[in-house]
Image (cartoon, rainbow, N blue to C red; front, side):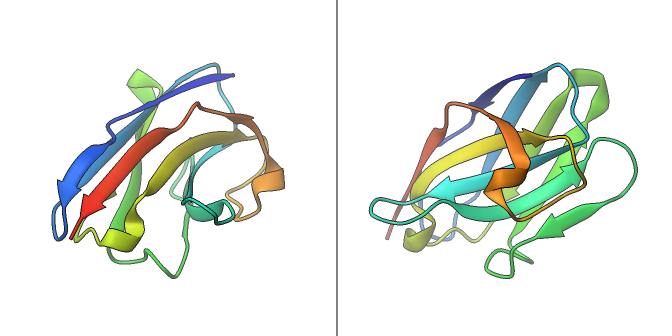
Length: 119
């Protein structure tokens, strides 16, 4: 599975961005993580390719929404009400198990896309 993340950029606090992750090959679920400078990688959201299963971190529940387009083999992360503390490199990842918060459950990772939120 190869993953290509895109959609990052510079946005003002309170704004929105939508990240995309195009996948070649299929897995059971997909996840989004982020890593800010000097911090550990943080789980954000995950989704099954089939069915309605999603999982969110409490820190982004209600602001971020994960979705998928099976026809395009693409997963999205809609991010609203962005804050300066959301500044990070965002990664998509593919897993062979049901949506999980553990980074060790994801065997394939995209290259990351930088999101910078200015206050």
